[in-house]
Picture 1 (tube, rainbow, N blue to C red):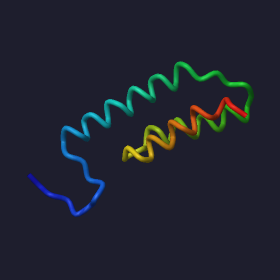
Picture 2 (cartoon, helix red, strand yellow):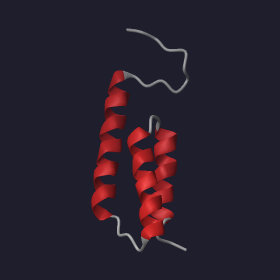
Picture 3 (cartoon, rainbow, N blue to C red):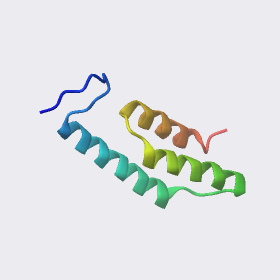
Picture 4 (spheres, helix red, strand yellow):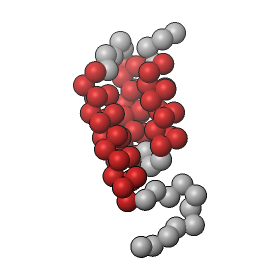
Amino acid sequence: MKKSNDNNALARSQRELFVGIRDFIVFKFKRMVVFNGVRDFAKMRFLSIELEKCENIKDLEKLCHTIYNQGTK
């Protein structure tokens, strides 16, 4: 087994769990978001791309909070 010097490195089982969680969030996001205009669509499209590229749990958590708070003003 190869060790990484990166403090954020995940074990194989952790990586599999993270990918599963991320894929579930992307799935739900694409099917449950209601767009109220072009500006919302552009922002949500950007967030969707960021979700798919996300590589660590802290960034994923921040994106989830951003998506959750998108509808509240």
